[in-house]
Amino acid sequence: MATRKARTAFAIKRFKKLVKEISQSKRGTLGVTIIAFFVLLAIFAPVIAPYDPINPWKDPGQYPAYDSPPGPKLAEKLCVPSWYEYIPWVHKGSIELKESFISYVVVIDGQKFPNVTNLYLTQRIAKAQKIEAFFPNGSSRELVPVEEWMHNPADLRRVTLDWQTAENLPDSTRVEVTYLTGTDITKTMEVVTDYKFSSSETFYSKWQNKTSHPELFNIKHNSQEGFESGGCIEITYSGSEYNASASEVNTTVFVPFGYAHWAPPKSFATHFSARIETTTKTNVTVTLWLRDEALGKSFLLSTYPITSKGTYFHYKAVSTGNETKGNIGEYPERIIFPRPANMSFALSVNFPNKENDVTVYIDNVQCILYGNSFGLLGTDNGSPFPPRDIFSTLVYGTRVSLVVGILSALFSTVIGLFLGLISGYVGGTVDETVMRFADLLLVLPTLPLFIVLIAVMKSTYGLVSMWNIIILLTFFGWMGFSRTVRSMVLSIRERPFIEAAKAAGGGKFYIITKHMIPNVFPLVYVTLATSVPGAIVTEASLSWLGLGDPSIPSWGKVLYDFNVSGIAVTKGLIEYWFWIFPPCLAIAILATAFILLGFALDEILNPRLRQRR
Image (cartoon, helix red, strand yellow):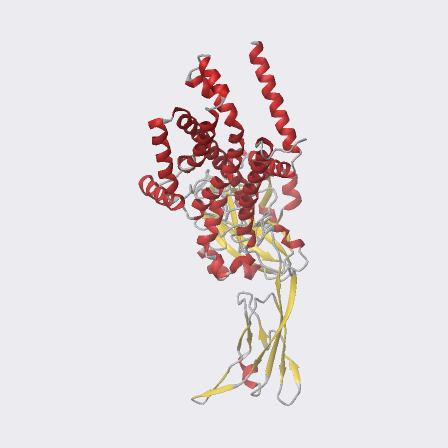
């Protein structure tokens, strides 16, 4: 027991000395610091990056209108980092543009056809300000809005001149259009802060209502009858008090919000849950709206008839939906949000059967506006999966790189140590067999062989796991270290203390474990540190080629996704640098850290390089 304690104390003392010597080495200190940073990043990945790096749905299971997929997308695709809004040279705000058109009239079969009735502009129109006509005689006149020209918000780049006005313009008249467009950095915005209506205070402070007949409706917060027994909006309609002279019976609940950007959101998604309670069969129609309060214009998103009672039904309307496009236009988000404005998100309940008493419960009401920026490193192109948060993928990828690099290096070093010891000490046929097998593996082209083997496994089993890659890296990574260990063992076994151990009756196992391993073990530390970078780079290379495990995030997978997206060809590397450069830098920095640690250990443990202190 005393001997064991002494050995343990000596091992601890030697380890402390090693740590002290590493701390005195600048390269060793830098390497350990970087490795420690990445290790902490891997351990606390769920805290640092709360979004799922593979299936980044927003709060899965919390949005009943979404079943498959399990929730709305986290963000829009190809978002820039959110801190772009603080960069001074990134333009944010309105831009005033002027574009000119030369008028002329074509006569066909006696009919005049002016060419300036439809003026197509090069940029999106946030606001058409004025149109001026500059006549050939040098005079000019500003055309009258509405009477002589108009702009329909659904026409994103077109203003229209009155036919008669355009026809009366002399040939060579220059028509100049002055309009506002804009660029901005927009963030994803949830219009409803408490979409589950868990708080009555939030409901009464945020929501407003407008009814056709206030005496027939009672609108309040209900804390018990919501979906899954939560809160909801309760709308009670007293049809028994209905006045036959009333032409329309409906009520609208809405939440005002401000849209402060000169660029429209990239898309939007809305959803709600509803059920009705009534004594007789009745039809209730629920419609979703977005309203521009400044223009006094309402945009119908979708209409839903609710006929069944007692059960919640869940509905959603998105900007890419056919009904929304049919009601508003091809790009609803650009038409509804052309510029900063005071807006409202509204839900209307219509009662075609006016004489029935009906109670309607509304829950899970939300409108999400997806901006063009998200997170610290933006999002990818979301193909074929939903857009992923690149920062989350980068953070979680640290785990894969560390696990693959360290385990591959550890396993291959252990195998190389074992075979090198056996081959060098036993010699003879064992030595020849092991070394010739190592020579055979050394001459094989490793990366092409990895590609072939993994491609075969992928076609056979349909999936290549991280452990398959670790096994391959281990199997093809032990040969160089085993030859180094063998050469050291050949030298050590001829020394006098080995002969003394043999004379004292020590067996082969005893000599190897008690004398050989302690003398070659300093080399193990160096080999472990210098083998990790190769494993990390190889795993990243395989993932970049699409031969990694698609179910786990890795730095190589980020590079693969960028490669197959075609962004490099269509838009270049500079515009979306935040997608390609961070994983490259992470691979280079982590690999360099292990190399620096290896150099430091070599200086400390190698007698020829050890500095005298």
